[in-house]
Length: 161
Image (cartoon, rainbow, N blue to C red; front, side, top):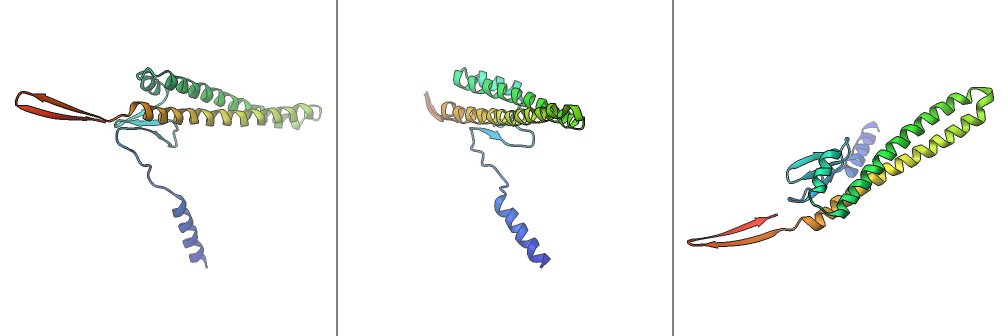
């Protein structure tokens, strides 16, 4: 019976797991890792705000830059609200033990929970903005070009992707 359960459990895990993410050559890809916000573009892994900024500002595409700035502001605001919400919940629970501060404690717990939920939402919106920027980049700036060159006694093709 235990073997049957183990086989069913293993089959269930294998059916829902995907080992690899398809990476199209020449395109930008948003990589989901334990350390979030990695972009792979032309055999280079970009990590973090400074590297993203150079990558998106290089295009001089205002919509890409706006999506990057939205990502940054949502990420920072979400992290601040998450930390503030966590501290508010901790101090609210501590105030519950005091007989005179139960109302304050419940108010801090409720406000902390709301802050924590809002921070998580903003962090997810920031990741969505970065994924949108990657998709938009691939639509606008990933065009394959075929060039033909002719010179005396030679001809050449250039395929830029």
